[in-house]
Amino acid sequence: MAPALAFLCAGVPLASLLDRVGFFESVARFMQRGVVPVAVWELWVLAAATTVVLNLDTTVVLLTPLYIRMAKRSNVDPLPLAVIPVLLASLASSVLPVSNLTTLIVADQVNASVSDVIGKLALPTAAAVVAGWLAYRRRFPAVLPSAPPEPPNRRALVLGGTVVAGLLVAFTAGPAFGVQPWMAVVAADAVLVCFTRLLPWRSIPLETATLVAAVAAVVAVVASSSLAADIRDVHGIGGLVGIAAAGAAAANAVNNLPATLVALREATVATDGMWAWLLGANVGAVLFPVGALANLLWRRIARDEEFRSARRATCARLSRSLPALVAAVLSFAVIAAI
Image (cartoon, rainbow, N blue to C red; front, side, top):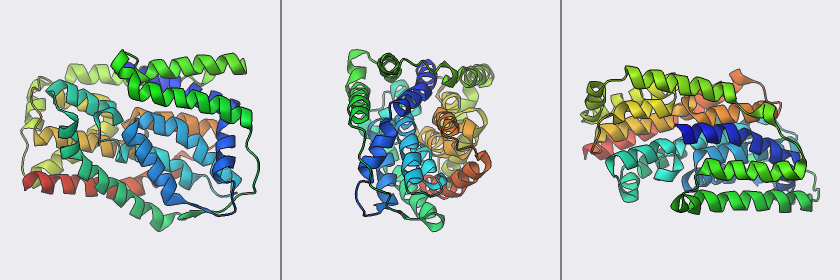
């Protein structure tokens, strides 16, 4: 879990530093430069694509402050746009191994290829994304009103855009050269600290990272190999639905990373039971803040943005993610049983 915790500690300062140079405000002005309202489904698709191609933490760090800026510029409640990145960080995170550290860990442990992961989890992920959108648009507006046209800060766009472009390159090509995402984020933090002459040490979530690490350590001690074998041996539509629900519950009780490790103990091959558990742990992790490190990232970033209504945010996540979880789990169970 060390790489994920390092990303957590470096990701919140990165969002703060990018905001300090005015990057998110400038991008929001650029995206809302015309008089035509922005279709919210485009923001939904952008968050899904970012999660699939890069990873869920990147979606939260880069898109949450941007979407909040866009909402404020349009003078609307920021909650509907603010929850999009954290929702898609879970709903769309099971397509590729790189999309979520949990999936990457499973693929490495059982020697599953990219095509294996896509074959098992791509369609359930698509079902989750579509069901989540249908639930989202029933309550929230499908169009973001146009904002007053303002020219973006070119310096902020160039500086922030260069840093973000470097991050995207490092996230996609870096692992082949031994550069992990957290290393790239730390390097980006260092560059921005030099330009802003500000070290946002107060935003580093050390307490959160320590708590998650402690929970993971307890789970590692308590979990047994017989429990892992029982999870992997589950089959049949009813059994797979039940084990996916259990995976989601475990993720929201102890975080999805330790929950995934529970099913991996002494695993050598991937089974439908393991894929179902992983799907539940990934898609269902958004239900409560502790479910995923991306949720904790989002909570810190949203708090820094003076977006403090935790109860409203939890209700918004629950009402949109539960239909998505059901759609993903049912589609996986049916496909696996065919």
